[in-house]
Each structure stands twice: as structure tokens, then as C-alpha cells.
Length: 264
Ligand SMILES: C[S@@+](CC[C@H](N)C(=O)[O-])C[C@H]1O[C@@H](n2cnc3c(N)ncnc32)[C@H](O)[C@@H]1O
Image (tube, rainbow, N blue to C red; front, top):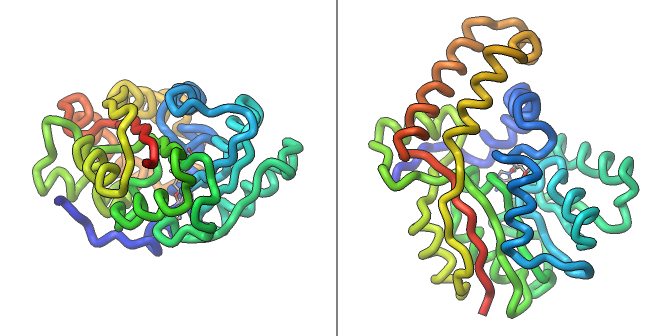
């Protein structure tokens, strides 16, 4: 497996600073590829229904939770390790009148601050790529789910064409990922922790990298430079890393996966 030495502390620094603001600029409040459409497809595949209680592992601003509470009538708990994101998530839930349906707990998703069997579903969107110990994460997800509960997540994964060690190191270092799982890797982790797969699918990725690069280069350049303190060299360097990722995405070396499985 192609690992970098990135730790949770490195990831917390990202979500405490300008890098997170850049992702917010190009992705919006839902910091995942495909925004609301992606959440909708995942929720439908998971069979979410009114009255269910779920946990969003790496909830960030809780935008996905707000969408699910409003659209599907679920109650949710969000777990995240970065105070800055949690503080904003609580404020935004309150501003949207959802404080009685949503709660937030600070914690590491490899040690979920929740009781055994507390939830009907576990939710995650494009965030578990930041987690060092994904085996422990899936074990914890199984622990906090009721029997028959559903795990549903999307994530950035290594694609079928595969990354060389050097390519993986470059992309994971830029993205601050310890490593990316693969479709088969996640399928194996889910099976090991007692899940029966319902959906394991590769989903669109490359066209979104095209979109982000076009936005940064053609529309949001001023805003991105402001976030980077006017550092044009840094802006160009980050652009070069995004271009490298775009090429890898179009070559099928980096992609996304959607996973839905049921706890036995
Ligand atoms: C890309 S954002 C998540 C986006 C969110 N799922 C959404 O769809 O809007 C990544 C988040 O993961 C959190 N995170 C990363 N590793 C974590 C860990 N081990 N435990 C808890 N939170 C973690 C970060 O603090 C950050 O808020």
C-alpha cells in the first residue's frame, strides 16, 4: 500500500486554515465531489427514511447532515476532529433551525464517541481518505451500528489503472491523505467487519477535477489568491498539483467509489 506519513494532526491543520477555505471556495459547503447530487444518490442507495438515526463520520460543516435531515427526515450526530469545522457546523445547524435534529461530537473516527449499536446508519462523504487506520474506522462503524444497520459512504480511491509509488506519494502528499483505498480494498474491509455489500461502484471523478481547475483559472482566481495571501507562486504550484491529479484521474489512476453495505 502506498502510504505517506500524514497524521490526523496534519489533517486538522488543513481544516483549520486556508487549504480548507480553498476547498470551500471551489466545492461549496459540502466539501465533497458532486455536492448535493452525490448525497442524494448515496442516500437513495442506502434507503434512508424518516425517523432513522445516523452518524456522519468526518462531518466537517455538517452540510450533508442538514441536507439529509431536511430531505429524508432523519436525525443525525456528526463526528469530526477539527474544532473550527465543528463550531461552524453547530452555528449553521442552529441558523437553519435544525438544532433539535442534529448534534455534533468532537472525536477521532477511529474511536467514535458513541455507544455500541447507537445508530441505524453510518454516513461518510469523501473524507475517509484522510483516515490513517481505515480498518479501525470500519470496525468502529460496525460497533456503533445496530444489527441490520447500513453503512453508506463515498470516497476518493485509487483507480483500476493503479498509481505508481511516486504518483501516489505526490497526490497523497498534496491532498494530505495518508493513503487511498481501492474498490476491492474497501470491499475486503467491509466483509472483514461483518458487512454484506449492497453497492460497490466506481463513480464519476475526472470531470469534476476539470471543473475545479476551470473555476480556479477562469472565474475564482482573485478569491483563491486572496485566501493564499496573494502568493502567486503558491497558487501556481497548487495548480500544477491539481493538473497532475487531473491527468491521473483521466488515466483511471484516481477515482471515487460509492459503497453501501448492511451489518449482519
Ligand atoms: C473533506 S472534509 C469532509 C467533508 C464532508 N463529509 C462533506 O461532505 O461536506 C474532511 C473532514 O474530515 C475530518 N477528519 C479527517 N480525519 C478525521 C478523523 N480521523 N477523525 C475525525 N475527523 C476527521 C476533518 O477534520 C475534516 O473536517
